[in-house]
Length: 415
Image (cartoon, rainbow, N blue to C red; front, side, top):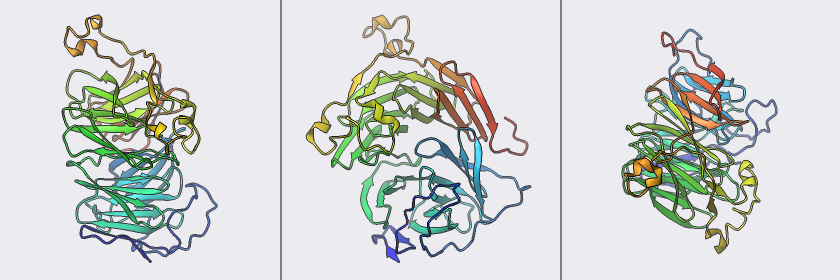
């Protein structure tokens, strides 16, 4: 047994001497034997189909080709295009409030819901679905707010602290203190040759960006109010943020912290539930509790943007010199946008800032007060998944619905 770094606040262990990382794909019939021993005290079991299931969480995998649903009985994994359940795992002891995928491989990170009698919300389970067993775990003194995975790292988010572990042996590598973070806000880059992490800073409205490969920390004062939502591009070069006011979304260069663009969702206060950047960095989508998904045109581009569509690529002009001083040169330059402005925008600097705002060029309307997460699919489509058990795929230009699926049905709860 390999033990994680001892600490007064938590303990961790991995239950195999051969490491926990494998590359098997979920849904495949061929898996190598990893030789892990099981500590999972209660195997996954099928539930009675008549039992009502509540949806506790929804989250994308790293390339937005799948999404995971944490339920009151376990978890379910869905493919996006087309929307189809890939598999489900159910427990009699209760459900999971956090289900984090690792692309499409057999490893997941799970955090139990409050009602889960066997797996409490202060424990992270590293689950190997091929072996149907827990192969590693972390236990903390406070509830886990979020978990993020890379192929080489596990990141655990607590209320005031973030822990970064090596994936193969669970060794603790970094600790980051944050402002109170009940939402579990944290996002990672996913290129193999660079590791960027974004999280709340120690001050209201601040985002901390760690470029671990460069040993560079950037503190970005993104908003005057507390941060509500943010996301990174796959390479970690762009950051999009929203505050609890939910009126403005801002895009930053993570290398130098400069603000590149600001777009306006609306005037009234709203809770931004999700922000997505398209792989080609041309579009931004955002969902809120107002029941509208907004799509904006971005006026920024990353040099060598052909590489952004290849999450596993190690080449690309924007990332090739990550270990040299030239990597700190500006990597992002303005481009032409297509967002509508106020007819009074020519009086920029004279009238209040509102009149020079950039607005979304396309919208798609959904039920209000239901949390939705958004992502970009193939062929200029926008994919929307809701906590009401709905899946929508709409064309990104006219925002015409292409597909609608109820991936999870609720008793007496019509859309």
